[in-house]
Image 1: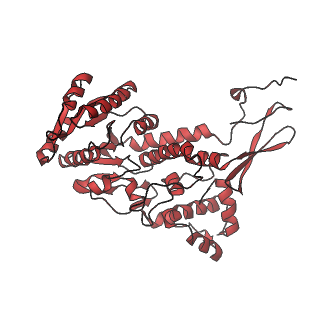
Image 2 (image 1 turned 180 degrees about the vertical axis):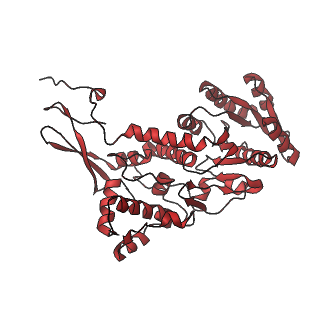
Image 3 (image 1 turned 60 degrees about the horizontal axis):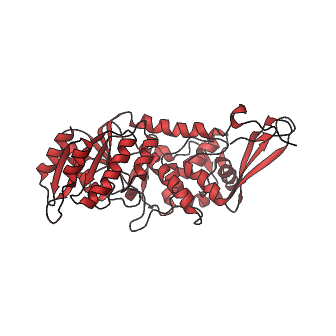
Length: 260
Length: 148
């Protein structure tokens, strides 16, 4: 006998679990928390080891020195470095409002997984080890959501999101934020880096994220190449800075000024 | 997800959740017409996946705490990660039995402040004057505090 089963949407009785409502409430919490932030900017690269965190930390400091308030969310959950770069180690204060970021060098507010995970230990989660690949990504996305929505960032002119290499975290951000965030891209001069970063920029553009410009880090010898200029030309965006191996403070000031 | 009593063609209603052990999450649903009760059981991986989303089957019993998923799920958390402002950590008039305090003291400090507040909120909402290990067990199952 064939059963006449109705569809999910045919069943309209109140659903006490309200899982969709819970997810929407999570998103609303992020939007509400970031409503007092002037701009959220993702610092990303398709390539590892190009100095994203270094650039992010110094850019945030320069923005702060120019009189704007700046914060950094270290979205590199498995390789957090921002707390050290900003000299912002120490416990996070929790009160009725939420978790408060640490103030680091030049007053830059930051939160990093380094604040939460023991020194020298990996970010490890409780749970069954078998098939952890199924849930680990989800858990990391939830952690990112909480760092956005549960941290009392307060009024900020700029919140920089320091992303790990690759695109996964950026795509998660696009799902968590009300709109895809503007993107600052960091590369080194080599063509290999250009190849990887090009893919990331294309993916960001395809998601509708505004591309603010390219920063070429570790510019000059011993690296050879013109990846920064090439990418900027290709995507019709400015090369915001070519940062040498030993940048002077003015380098960061100029970058901050160009970013506005 | 929803459950349909095929025989009655009625949507079943959520009854309760439980943690019977082995990483299993049990959620029971009842047909409002015939009274049939079914239990949905998840395996440990599925339980983990639900927890990873930061949602709770059966709905939220108490408001979400700051960094609740991170604090509840990270196994390598720092003991000194948080400074709890006293106003947050107070139990608001709810007492703790000696056994319950001892049990709470065994919760890693990374998550202890949050767990204490969750149990206190749970007790306050239900008019429970003293938190005992039995109250903690019930709250843990009802609120979905797997791993806490």
